[in-house]
Length: 443
Ligand SMILES: Nc1nc2c(ncn2[C@@H]2O[C@H](COP(=O)(O)OP(=O)(O)OP(=O)(O)O)[C@@H](O)[C@H]2O)c(=O)[nH]1
Image (tube, rainbow, N blue to C red; front, side, top):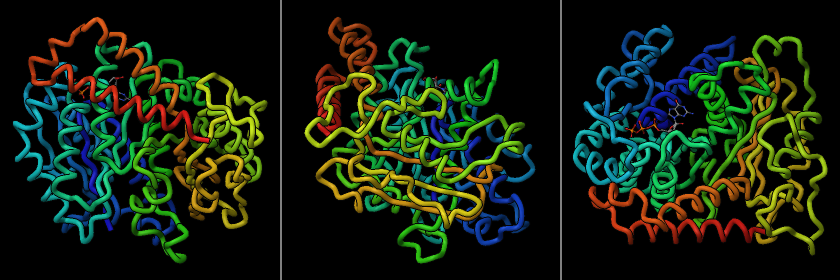
């Protein structure tokens, strides 16, 4: 079964290119035929000459980034994008969600749908679709939301995962919070699960764990791609009966997004370090999992700066506040372990019922995937994908900032002129307030 990826806007196209690059080099490393075949079938098709072509579409409203992503892929010599798997125009969406959603999306609907249909027809069986984009610009967020809506219409029973990059808090785009609110509120109705990377968090990983001095988008994207790859590469799941799972998105969604009110997924991976240090480091499963569990409950996205004081509260004292230092309650977690001695690894207490909301048993709330194949040069690595309160605070901040701007009607005319009304904004605020309220009450 195969996954079709739709890359949208500058961010989606740059992150997507890094993702395919990591997946391809990981699949081709060493002698592990079954793993490699499963990964390639999932993400690439082969030409008559045996060349790997990504099952991906590149969509943008300007050609520059698409051209660069395509030429970087071709230059790798290991894989490429399909020659006609892209759609671009001459001018971007000017960081305006309404321009992307109301104008560019509908105008180019037929062309984009045709590309998607062709790619889906190349799959023996479709395991689902991934749409990748940022929420802050105009094309990824606006066209990306519109395209997700089209995908939902054409493939009503397929799994759709949206991968979203959240902007830096001290934003580059003045209306980024408007664009983010409109994107999230709409995707919440369309997507099966929304997996989020925050640029600020990934930036800190680059600086503090990887010791990168002048951090570029390419560095940030490599970290995102590494984390995503660690979820998406083949693994043995509870339902896959000893063979690599053939239904990665379906199993991801059923493990983590069991309730339509809770679709926001965050993730963390350990270890992460400069590649020059990997060879000199050794890790034990209990050590890795102890750190990962504490990262989860204290809501820390990297190994450095973990708050070891946070403990699961006694039943009576569960914290419902947004205050810092509080316990991060989970709805569901998926733990993915890859590498040496993986069969002897335990769950590290991440299946402890005290970590979860009381209305799901930890048996339903916790899932474990394993693969004996080391991922992306790490002898052992552990990834946790979490449907928890982890994104509550950034979401609340984002909605709060957008609301403050909306209260003075700042920049609203720029959305109205493309067809988004004040009522549309109010509807989006209302639906995200509901999401915030649901996650706040998770206990
Ligand atoms: N992580 C990461 N973030 C990016 C990248 N490129 C842009 N961003 C972020 O994405 C947001 C801007 O969105 P873009 O993807 O550049 O915009 P777009 O979707 O192409 O839309 P328009 O420029 O309006 O046509 C900002 O928050 C940037 O920080 C990237 O390669 N990686």
